[in-house]
Image (cartoon, rainbow, N blue to C red; front, side, top):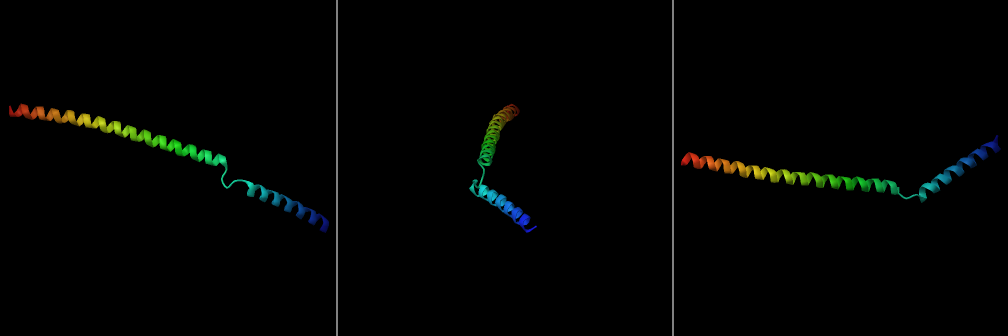
Length: 82
């Protein structure tokens, strides 16, 4: 019984020691995690830039429309005055 217990404990110690060594030699963060994080950040930047571009276009369109409305109002005012 004691011999069997010693053998089992030795095997458990071996497994634990090997796993600990593997984990300690592994980088803090896996390269795959860094790649995934980097890709996500790049996709986020791309999406934000797209949203900003769409916003600029909408503001430009709104400005053109406001100028058209203003010109229409001025024309009507001149017509009423004349």
